[in-house]
Length: 511
Image (cartoon, rainbow, N blue to C red):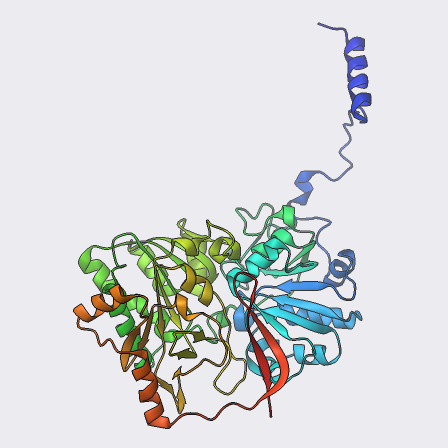
């Protein structure tokens, strides 16, 4: 055993060789210790302090998520503050934008926001952009495409602003609260996870600051630079607003029942199958109508994916779906389930649907049921631009799930009012027809000619399988062929394919 002096000399030599200081024992407790972070942290600052501390400059890119959907309060709060502080020429990278984001119109006019990338937009903001509000076209990406773009650097985020239902002072954040005092619950934070992982700076905004540790967390303290406590980050009652609704429309119910018959007779409805339903009343309702057959046939699903609903939660709690993989909770019941059910887990947008990630969940998806604004005779689908040429929807995970699933089923009425939904050519190409297998309408079911085996199974089950051209002709016979839309020459939107190539462009609609 060496002497104390010899040991000290060896320690000094090792420190010198490494260019380090030697340890000095300090028994003082005057400094801040880890235990003091249970309720206090230098990360907790005001919104203005967070913006300044992040080194915000004109021309930077800021990002947001849309898990609160129509109840979101974070985008307007942050952009209002940035405008007040005098910032200009900012790029806004939101996973999606809603009716509630109408105040962005003035920020665009005033030069605070000069470019936008998103999955979709609605309301007066979408209307204004469709008519040429912005000089730069909006870049539209699918959810998987956005995740890939963030991961590979095509979409670089300088500062991510993440609204969280709860956070501790170090930034461990969730879309629900483990306390009983939660003000705003949104459930999964899947679309915010890539932003937290890749942004240069991350600011969590919350209306429920809880004691450390708020774990296991969706967003880790190691990714978070600042925490801002505010009055409210969102209105939970509006999570299911817009396209996310439990339909009572008789036509939607009829479509859902027909789509359920397609699922049951598709050849993919086997024990251990996996499923996703997109937004839109009919596609969401399909789950209710396959439940009885699952029970009768003793069939259970291995997992349900994507936007999770109360219907999915019910089947999970009944033991009919083993696991829920949740990138976005579509209603409060799903958000509450994420908190209490151990096999209901959130997934990042990359883990959900990135084409670049071979382990993303969509690659293991058997069945997806999707909605559409338009389908053309080549099975191409439009979910973004309305028949009037106005942007009124979102790409979402539509092309991601259609491309990767075993069978993709698109559900839409033949007509909406006096507007045909089966057309010669879609207004805007969002999901290529090569990835769409079945189109379900109330007047018949069209099967992609590339999937003859599916057509044979459905015919054998007695379903009304028709040629998609016959559906187009029937729509035209009722209302006539619509006149061409009065598009202008200005490109107001660019639609990206999930592989990063340009899929289509959207031109301005004339007043």
